[in-house]
Length: 315
Image (cartoon, rainbow, N blue to C red):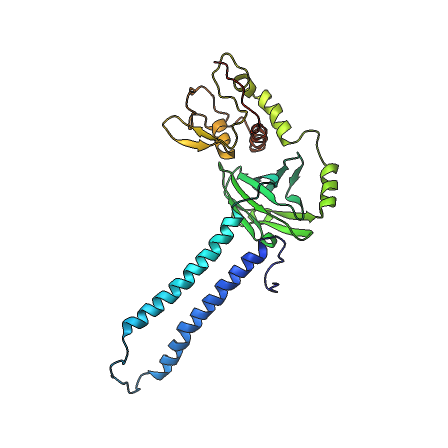
């Protein structure tokens, strides 16, 4: 379905979103006509000076009220189910995706690919491959918006948000910040470059750095001294990180959380906020010592340990 007044549809979800939006427009137009056309008719029929009939109605008005309540209710529930299905699919990426990490900053989008490639205000992706974006902001609230992909997500400081899309059409598409984020907000834009898989692989290989994101994170892990406590330490009783990512973590106080990107970020910056059962609050905060890009690299490394078997701990 191509609608001439809509942006180009370049992702797998674009047409589904367009159909929902068109459905909302048609239903809104239907009720607009249903309400305002009789209003206009009655406006002239019962204008001032017109003789009015005071006869009693020949039917029960409660039946009419039930009908005009149930029909819109049914239509709204259908719309809710339709929109919820799309939202559900949009918020759950498939098991295998390309990963890219986005850090928003006045006035740019800084992007790191899992393979280690970096970009500013540009994101290269292949067609036919799901792309998962993990995003955060260094300063204020921004909003990552690609009209052609029908993708829009607020990016908030101190929090990781994720979105995914599957490009279907090669080309270059605009990337906007859809949240007023300061005086030069209008300058915060960029491009999404969708390439055929072979072209994308050539682009990736041409700019691929020596280390991928996880390998860079491993260097940082040792540079910041994390390995001194989390690997073979006989002095500090700290949890090993092999096999941790994606698993449930029992916390002091009885709560259980999942070791996802947000949990690892909080453990680095706010280590006292969520202490795992069996461990003491001895880790210092790295707030102000680690940049957003370095946090992403450290998380990528810890994530790469997720499939490893944790060794026996040394107490």
